[in-house]
Length: 324
Image (cartoon, rainbow, N blue to C red; front, side, top):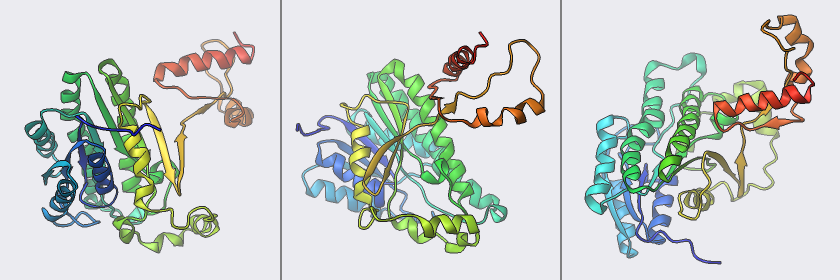
């Protein structure tokens, strides 16, 4: 098996002072990448600032013979995002890889979320990803090559009580990654989204109050964790993250999950559904009720990669149902 290398590549990793980002940065550097280690230095709830976290990772990379520079700007402003990318350009002359990983948690019941709890999460996870990705995208486009990885969450894809603000922000990243993938396809740029699973410092921000929801508590207590012991750790995510931003990986427009050492593509699919009779008259509500089982039947499914692909899928469904 040939070693997968990043010699000559320049990577930006946001939130790289701890947890997932730190491990990504170290592994990329070990494989030859020059790395911008961005971290504001805040806590798991996004409080405070410090240069220490980023500096320690940079020193660890340099001590191992790699190349890295620190950046302490917040991703939550357009100026901060621009400064992060400019750090890469000033230090290494280009940007090849951008891993948008910065984030924190502020959990609460949906009904209790304040503007501050909502805005802070949206600003860092969603707007922050845009603010860093835009200037990085422009730099990549000039060079005709780029790899984006956005950090999503199973909380958005599948659901987690007491995380409405976090899930909303992470859900937005699904759409963002898809559009970057579509537009970037013209310029040698790929974009994918990772749903990592790890016991990181953010776990300390989790409030078990969500167990007040009976159905959710049942899901937590009834889950089979037989394949998970010792495997819900940060390093299990790194191989997939690093592969997705490699030159060898040309897959794009994808969502990928890592959970307990299981690596899988996650698909957003539409059922074949029920097609109303041809003509310009919409069906009645009663027609929807009468055909509900067909509408929800997943025996045949399709995976549109653009909104226009869905028109083709509808035509195929109509033909299968003998309508055209």
